[in-house]
Amino acid sequence: MSALQEFVERHPRLCVLTGAGISTSSGIPDYRDAQGEWKRARPVEFRPFMTSPAVRQRYWSRSTVGWPIVAQAHPTIAHRTLAQLEANGVVQLLITQNVDGLHTAAGSRNVIDLHGRISLVRCTQCGHSLPRAELQTRLTAENPGWADIQAPAAPDGDVDLETRDFSEFVVPDCPECGGILKPDVVFFGENVPPDRVTRGFEGVANADALLVVGSSLMVYSGFRFAEAAANAGKPIAAVNLGRTRADHLFALSINAPADDVLGALDNEVRV
Image (tube, rainbow, N blue to C red; front, side):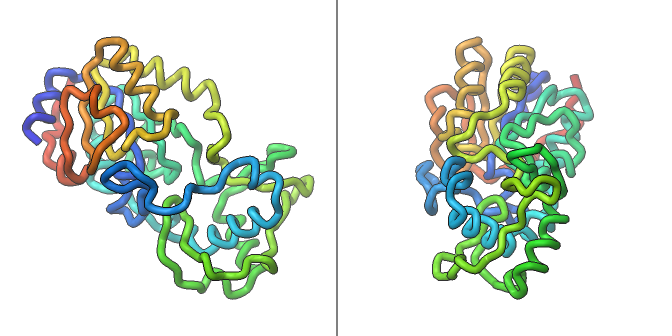
């Protein structure tokens, strides 16, 4: 922890990259184990979601049960520390792979939601958007009893409901055009919007160093920023439980929970 304090003091203009590990103490499970392997089946993929009504029934039924987990989550000590460091001029840009919106809730303002926000739903045909909370009202009204089901939590508002029959679940269409509604997040098989990637690379280029918190970086959408920092000669520090795809690139690696480490930082450090 003192090593991270020294790292921040030596590199007071930070770009930060966060992943699911920073939100686990908010009650939102992460995807990977200490070896960087999947803890469960891969999340839904874009093409099956768009082409199969059964896949959409499975996704939205599980989401109906799991949405309150994300909706009721609160920022952690780690989220709040990063927000304070931004307010003090230390964190110049925060790139998050998470879709839970907790960095913004904690007070961070210069945030790139790399994979979008699960609190918003968008029509894939006409672009109409609506709050996920509003859709929850429709989902529960059209599928009585589903919101009362108890099930083990999975990442990003999902739950484990493998034994349920989803075939009768009613999936609402877009209220404007009847198109397919999809959470405003990047699914596997989708590309991250180019403007977010460009802003992320600019943030890395303008920073003294990169700090990775709670990410195994196994997905290339996040790993590329560590790769860019290393190629530019920028030092990288990481706070993460378990191995990562970028272990060979780190100047400092701390294998510990994000709350423990960031909570011990002197967040009065200023540029």
